Length: 237
Image (cartoon, rainbow, N blue to C red):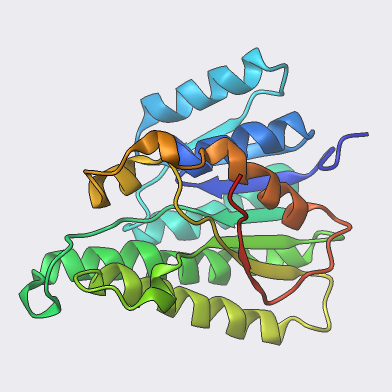
């Protein structure tokens, strides 16, 4: 039996990059994946790839994580169809503008906070009851090494990822006496569109691919996993 056979998994930011790779890998491991992103075409391409690999068709949910009301609608929709949620992967994020903190436009700051931090809190708030309804609920969030690197010009992204880490670890501490296990992953330098935008002069061939880190998500989503409240660094290939 595959490691995630019969599990129900929700993945945000699933239309490309790490989210798409995790979606394909989860489906290959037997999970039914619920995929969210803003771009319908991107979600359909990932679903096509899952089917081509022999996986079950995904449930596609076009969703803008800046819209809190739409996030709140996820829980009753998932409850009505599946009755539970086994795995939540909070992967979606925005880079914002790289530049001096004092020069950041308020709209850029507000979007980074909304997508990287507030949306994940809304997901936790809405979906915790469904994750607790699972026999082995798992929640995995994507952070960044920038939190500890103190790099100039990354203020909005670094601040929101630091906030996400604090939020998730606090939530994990609340759940120690439950079967629900919660962790964060720092994937490291990975060949994604966000990385290319942040590091335009970098040779992408020197970076690991999203597929290289997808296995770590499977490890943490596995019902047998006991890790909890950790920030886990992906190993370079």
